[in-house]
Each structure stands twice: as C-alpha cells, then as structure tokens.
Length: 83
Image (cartoon, rainbow, N blue to C red):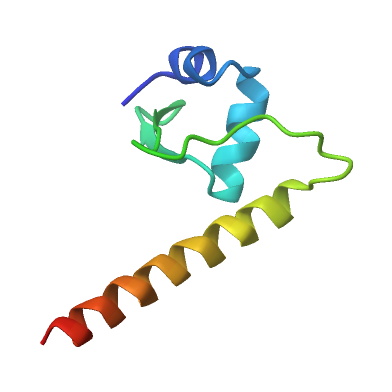
C-alpha cells in the first residue's frame, strides 16, 4: 500500500490523476483514517498516461475490463481442454 504521493511518483503522474484513476478503477484505493486513502497498484500491466482527448479514461477502463474477461475465459477453456 502506498500513499497518494508515493503512488503518483511511482506511476509518474500528478496526484489528482491518481485520484481519478482510482475513481474509475484503474488502481485500487483503500480508505485510511477517514481523511486519506492508501493506493494499491497492480503488480503487472501498470496503467500509463494517455492523451485523454483521443483515448478517454472510460474507454481505457472498458478495454481493460474486456481484456481481463477474455483472459479468464481463455484460462477456463484451457482447463476444460486439459481434463
């Protein structure tokens, strides 16, 4: 778990960008002491900065969820083939 400042520095983004990413689900935030959050960064496939004019945050989240769903489906299909 990282503070807002630490997580933003690790991702090389502004702290407010980190908050928006957490609100949309690109990174996970966890409430801490009622005033602050701690942030959990994904171990793989860290989010990257993009031009929001052409690649909106909502579209990026949807694409990430779609890719995750495909990975789960492929993994499940491979387990079925092995049996």
